[in-house]
Amino acid sequence: MVWIILLAAAVVLFLWGMGLYNGLIGRRKQVDNAWAQIDVQLKRRYDLIPNLVETVKGYAKHESGVLEAVTRARSGAMSVRPGDTGAKIAAETELGSALKGLMIQVEAYPDLKANQNFLALQEELTGTENKISFARQHYNDSATNYNTAIALFPACLLAGMFNFRDVDLWQIADPVERQAVKVQF
Amino acid sequence: MARRTFQELIAANKRNSFILIAGMFALLGVIGAVFGGAYGDPRVGLIAAGGVAGIVFLISWFSGGDILMAVNGAHEIRKSDAPQLWNVVEEMAIAAGLPMPRVFIIDSDAPNAFATGVDPQHAAVAITTGLLEKLKRDEVQGVMAHELAHVRNFDIRYSMLMAVMAGAIVLLSDVFLRSLWFSGGSRRRSNDRDGGGAIMAVFMLIGIVLAILSPVITALIQLAMSRQREYLADASAVEFSRNPEGLASALEKLASDKSPMEANKATAALYIVNPKLGLRGGGTDWFSTHPPIQERIVRLRALN
Image (tube, rainbow over the protein chains, first blue to last red):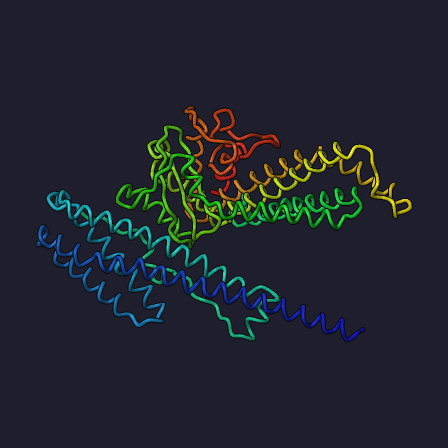
């Protein structure tokens, strides 16, 4: 009789442990998926930029400095080694600022601002920036969810056993970036 | 109103929903057992209750959201038809981690929106032209976030489940009461049980009371559940947009609107506000599908 009870208890414990483990795996996969979603939006941004740079070049020949900065930042971001999260975040943040800088400079060119092609690109860019923002938010939410799950007791025991580690949040590394972009006329 | 995070609101709402669903299941079980007991065997009653519920459930599950869209005069759009609306929905889908739903527009002056779909892969959202005209982008985003919250929280599936159980309960009560009418006073069943007749009579009495009360009880549980899920959807909407004011000001505009809207009772609960003019403000009583709009706005603004 005692045998049966022990066996039942062992089975229940195993099933419970399995449930916990699968929960952690599920959350980890969510995090990976959320990261991939950010990539989808980032890629949209990369694809927009060459067209944008060409359109602006036609009207704003004196802004070659800003345009070069954007092009350089884009190449930099695209060449980050996959897996190097810190470098990726830094590169994408830099690209974001370069684009913001370009959009501010563009304000001085009324001909450019009236160009239909440019307007369409600007709309796409704004939309893409929004989506990148939300994709990052979702990634951070998923990452926090996962990090919390592996820290709670008793799941933390399993986490230790099977080597579940914390994932990094998408955070701005450079404190300078947190300052609002200065507008100079 | 004490400051709470949207995470706390979501956790509280999930607990309340669980209690309400459990209550509904319990009621179905009790009714099955009592009705069965009145005729000799509670277990038979339980099985019958389960069987009826199962059949009704399968029928509702497969009848789909397309019927709902057709009934409400909605037509599907592509990105090029309404790019800003499409972008707003896409942004919220990304924030929620959901696949992009189908998007429908309803030609109507009355401002309202709803979501359908038993799971995120088969989801659709609809919005009236009246609402699109009256709201700013932030506010449309809040409303769409609320609708996508219904999708992610499986509210459509929950409400279908509750409706099926309620339907089964009402059906069983009806059958039971009719059976009394027809079988009159003959008690031939208790031939081989001494004293079994008395127990059966007790079951019978309880059964009659339950049969009369249960439709009202199930309606109350369903409506309470509906209100809980609305609060939950509001909190989840903030989780996606991180902008409580967008939804709050949209609700304010909705509360003050006076245009009538056609909608049948069955679909009313899925809308962001009850379409019937008199019920649009929600209610403080037990019979409202939606919580009072002012209370929803207060809770949203307390998140700031």
